[in-house]
Image 1 (cartoon, rainbow, N blue to C red):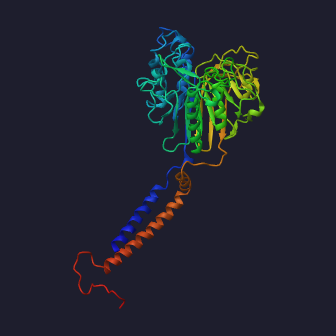
Image 2 (tube, one colour; image 1 turned 135 degrees about the vertical axis):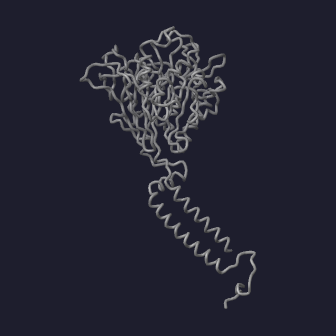
Image 3 (cartoon, rainbow, N blue to C red; image 1 turned 180 degrees about the vertical axis):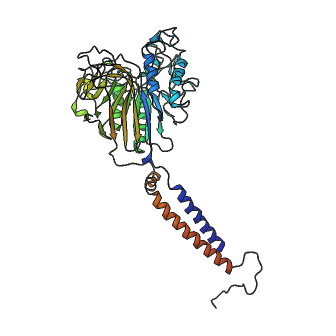
Length: 500
């Protein structure tokens, strides 16, 4: 019994001392990180044979790349990556590595050689022969270009991507990653809505729609996968952020709610957004439209489903607006916020001030030096046209358990109307006002221990000292009374079986 007791007390000592050193760990509530993003990042303006040294957005791309600040956890290129193909009088493929080297040259001085650069397919690199072919997504994500960053934990779609190469898989098309890996507070989902991807004979249409609505089994499988990914993130208490190149609502001149056609009388692009509304997605990030825009917080489309490829198919309904965003503060769970970031290098887009879609946006900006659309101003601010200095840039979001905090960062001024004029800026916050959720009991305990670790460590230390002293006394006392096992027992050492 003595040896057993001694072993028990020794184990207690180890556990007590181990507790002291394990107390000051990080809980979910303490995690935060910052990422940046933009679509339409490429180099319009370079001419064939110029060695990529053209003007226009070649300079713009370099300016935005160099403006990315240190401290970012990753950057997401949300499609229309380089334009280094038929759009710029280059061959349709073969120039992807030139773009990748261009990116590395411009970001590595401030962000380092191993900075995570994440890419999402856009229509310029989907391989679709009916549009400009400016490289191919699998070449952009190849090992000698800008491959999948190893540290993000990308999980591919379970539906599969049959058009993809073996080394890329669904990366760049469809999948998600939870971040940070060791204590995730946000789930990032990349999809390829309304893209027909394939650089050869095999093409895949990436659309999302319930079977009962569109009567298309392929779309239904992708819709079910997307629904499950969103719902699981919500159960885990994570923010849900979607990257999808093509928007459905847009305040520009030409972008429509594309859905790869009409199926059973419905637009899959609109049905995908119905899923975002019903599942409570926090933030949807698009490119494609060459403007910056930030929506109001939305719960629905309005009275009619937008018609695919129509710029007049949206009907504005005030009932769909949960928060107009005029104070730049939203509350989580009330609706979806949509950001379009298409001016990383492009400055040819314009705001359409009479389009119904525009009323769903709190802010919008064109980087065009001289807008031609009446009233010839750059911007839309809380329901009214406005003019100010404007330019190209990107979005930046800081994520914590308590909020998403967004800032639009200008990298180069392209419209200047005077020193006394205001300069366009945009910020907003989505505050997590919902009851706190944690993915495990460990997170709840971690939050308490982290906040009180000094007091708990002092108590634990005092308790351990008491146990150590008690153990020494007991073990020492027993050692004086009891013989060591295996030693001869003298008559004077024989214990009494009964009290004397």
